[in-house]
Every structure is written in structure tokens, then in C-alpha cells.
Image (cartoon, rainbow, N blue to C red; front, side, top):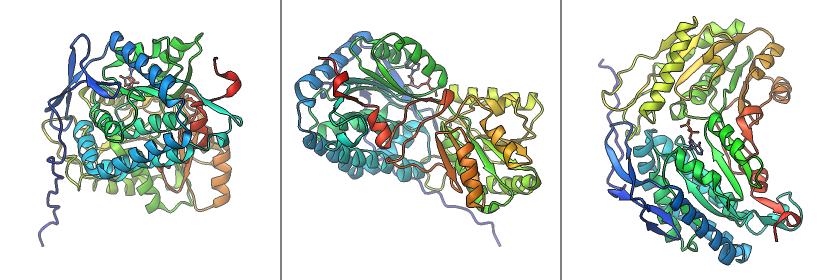
Length: 484
Ligand code: ADP
């Protein structure tokens, strides 16, 4: 019998109408960057240039912030909350209607499998707008007193791993709470944010309520330092998060910071192994491991470790790596050459420090940025691969003997964003969940998200929460605090 092979099933690119170049979105229209500078955004799976993107500097940011301030003062803060909510519903519906187009553009710009952008990123982004639309006229229940007020103009900076989804986590609660925004997408993935600018136009959102400026870290830093910003909402690396915290110290700006993670995914001896293996794979290989809450430290109870690792390797051999536009693909391209370099550099310390590397055998495309799914066994807590965020498809496997040791090892990190627990015993799950110092804890599952559920970290994983009532409260203040 001949070997079973998947036929290729690429999604059509025709649906994505990507322009040759994009300007900045300020005051409801696309405007040229004042200095006329631009940069390319590429498809990381092929290294093809997708579009030229305007590069915003201080002058452009100043215009965007002034525009957002004026929209806040003259329009958005005066609009009845119920009316604001209608715009959010409209945006949510348009995102649903244009979901396929958004999925294709996201996959082309980011390198993630089309199956993930289509089934996870875009539906969740729309869900965030639907959820927050409902909040717009119920803000008195957000937990900040009976007369909550918006903060004003919010500067928002997002990363490249879930571009549209992170945009929706930022923009939806900010608008529902009555703020106006200036948002900067990451330099390697600006396209869906610019497509979102078109959605704002289509929804008839008042000009200047949402402004999108494109650029790199220097652009981001200029936004953070603009004196007329009331709050910074940032998702990205802990290093940049710390720099932002330093820059806004001694100002009146508030901040939400969603930073790195090194989540423990703990498998106890009484877990259902096959399900746990699926959860481990989902925990670390979803989105190429470019996930701040990825289950990147697998903690296995010692007596089951060999069996689970063996099952895991078998399962990893079935992961299909390749063309992100193919619906059969499980693991797409690494987002950029720089990120691939970073992943390789930290992974190589695993070899140097004595851990054992194993990678699934797979043929990697010759163009683009790729990494085979990889695990390291024999990892100790002191190894760099057990301590630092790799942000790629690389799993570090550690073992423990007793539940108490599992908790101690899981909490032995500067991070605390998420954790996973696999066990057949409800009492053990609840016991462990109470002891883990992590903002989100999944039991017998991993990487599940819902707009109603607050997300955020302990320790160096960040400040504040996003999603749910707690996330919304971060965009509000009680009346007495508002500057007259
Ligand atoms: P990563 O390390 O995962 O690439 P970064 O934290 O560097 O993530 O980037 C996340 C976002 O922060 C991007 O939009 C990036 O342009 C922006 N950024 C980078 N450096 C700074 C900075 N110093 N100040 C503000 N924003 C920054």
C-alpha cells in the first residue's frame, strides 16, 4: 500500500487586496508621513515584499495624539455610551464579514498557519469587539465606582505574534470605556492594523477616535513619551516593558503591561497521557511558540516522564511544517530573521549546558524563516532554556517527584503569566492552582481564551489585566480623579 499523503490545500491569496504602499491613519484618513520615510513588510514564509509602510516619527505622532485628543474632547467623550456601543458592534460585524480576507492578510504578513488565523485570531478579535460593545453602556458595573470616566487619549503598542487579536484586546476596551487611541502595530506585522483602519472608515467611526501609526521601537518610544498621552497599553517583551515603565515614572500616565512568560505545564502521574500530549503540543507549538503564555517548561512527574516523552516525540513527528497558506499546515514560518536568530541563540545554550536536543524530522522550505519543532530533555532549572523566554517552537522538559516539588519548580521563575495542570484529580488541580503564581491557569487544557476572562501576569510578566471587567477597569477612573 502506498503511503498516505496530504494533497496540498492552499487558501487563495486573491481575497487579500494588499496595496503597494500604506500611509498613516490619522483623523479618519490615510496621510503621508511628514518626512516621507518608509519600510518594507515581508512575508516571512517567502521573504517577498508585501508592501511599503510609512514610517512615523515624532511629528507624525504629535499630529496623531492631537487628533485623538480633539476627537476625545469634541466627540467621543460627549457621545451617549449606547451610541459608542453601536460603533463597536458595527466593527465586530464587519470583522466577521471580512474574516477570510483578514485571515489571509494575517497569515501572509505574520507567517502563522491559515488554520490558526482563520479559526483563532480573527474570530477572537471579533469576539472582543462584541463583548466590549455590550459593556459600553454598563460601565458603572466595571468596579470603579458609580460614575466611571474614561482616561482620555491612550497610546497602544502591540507585538507581532497576534497582530489583529492584540489590536482588538487594546482598542475594544479602550473605546468601550470612552477613550480615543493612537495604536502602533509591530514593524513586521502592520498590515491587519491598516486593514482595520479601513474597517473604522467602513463603520463610520468618528474621525480621530482610532489612529494607527506605523514604525519601529523608536516610533513606539516617541508615543510613550508624548506628554499628552493619559495611558500606555503595551504588549511585548519584558525588556521593552521595563523601559516603558522607566519612561513613564514620575508622570501622570497610567500603564498596562503584558510582558513575557515561561509557563510551567505540569503533568502529574494520574493525568490522561494522550490528552496531556495534545495539550503539550498545543501549549508550545501553537503559533510557532510565539506566544507569551506558551507552555514552554514542561514539568513531568518522574515516574511517567519516559513514557510521556516517547508519546510526545511520536506526536511531534506528525506536525506538518511548511506553507502557512496550506490548510494542512500545523507550524508555519518564524516571524522574522531576527526572531529566528534569537531562538537559535538561546536553543544553542541548551546544547552547550548539557541538555539533550531532539527535533522532529521535517523538510524545511529553503526560502523564509523556519525552525523544526524541538524539545530538550535533561533540562535543569539553572539552564538558560529553563529560565529565558525562547518565543519559538522549543520546549524544555524538566521532571519532579512530588506535587510540592512541582509547585516549587513551576514558581521558580521571574515570570508568572500562565500555567497548565494535567491530572485526573479535581482536588489536586485546585490545590495546585491555588499555589501557582500565575495569572492564568488552565487545567486539562491549554491556550484557551475568552474576552470575558482577564489575562495578565505576576512578577515580570506585567502590570494589570486585559479582558473581562478587570481589563476594562484599566481604561477607567472614578470621577473624582478626572482632571477638570
Ligand atoms: P519582541 O522582542 O517580541 O519583538 P518588542 O517588545 O521588541 O517585542 O516589541 C513589541 C512592540 O513594542 C513593537 O510594536 C515594537 O515596535 C515596540 N517597541 C520596541 N521597542 C520599544 C520602545 N523602546 N518603546 C516603545 N515601544 C517599543
